[in-house]
Length: 116
Image (cartoon, rainbow, N blue to C red; front, side, top):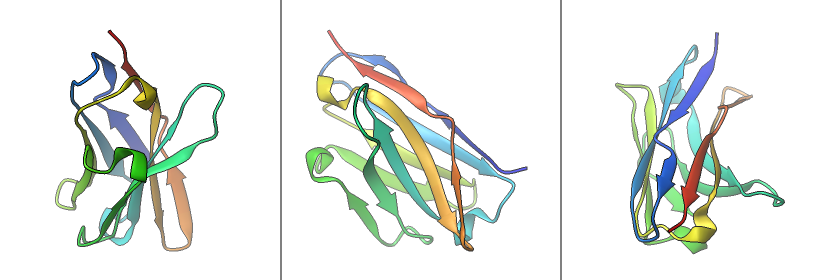
C-alpha cells in the first residue's frame, strides 16, 4: 500500500521556522522525483519545491527562494522541506507529491499556519 505521510506542520510566528517531513512507503522511493505543493484557502494548489531522484537537482518557487530548502534521504525514504523566515502568506496546507514509473501519489497534507 502506497503511503505518503507528511508531518511537522503547526502554528508558528512570523520569522519562525518549521521542518516538514514526508515519509514514503509502498513504492521505490529512490526512483521518484519528489515535490512539495501548498494550497491556501480559496487559492489553487501551487508548487513550492521539487527535488530529483538523487537529490542532485532542486528547484524552489520564487516567493520562497532563499527561505525554503528541499532535501531527501533515500535511505530513510523521506523528503524534507526546511522553511525559514516564515511569513503569514506561507499559511497553507502543504502536500507531498511523488512522480515516477508513470505514476503519481499524493500525501494527505499538513497544515502550516503563520500568525502572531
